[in-house]
Image 1 (tube, rainbow, N blue to C red):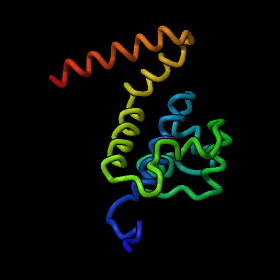
Image 2 (tube, helix red, strand yellow):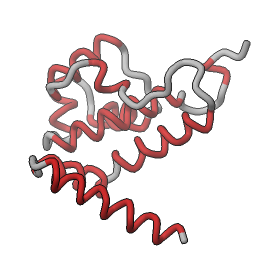
Image 3 (tube, rainbow, N blue to C red):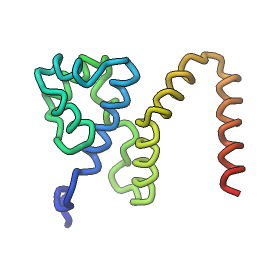
Image 4 (tube, rainbow, N blue to C red):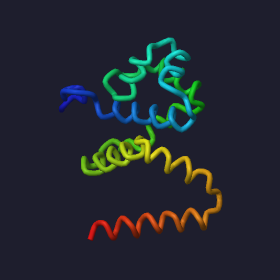
Length: 136
């Protein structure tokens, strides 16, 4: 059985958690320096967490949860379930990457402000239509 750490480079779970840290940090308007100060780290260490280069320990993740006001499971949302096919894993990773970009975060911020479900459904329908046209 292959061990998860046998691959070279950052572990996909560490990358995912890092992307979620970055996404949440940007959503709440906290800079890397501010987060680093709250955690007793340098902003370079926060950068490495966000890239998945350095793993976040359980105690640091707990502290990050407190600073960013989210439960620990927030950072694992979107990870594939154990035993899911690798194609599903790649799709989840791609979606997490898109959501962690500046455009993805801005889109989420704006979408979150729209509380009326019918309007939200229309927006999703519009985006689906645009995506379908671009695929053709």
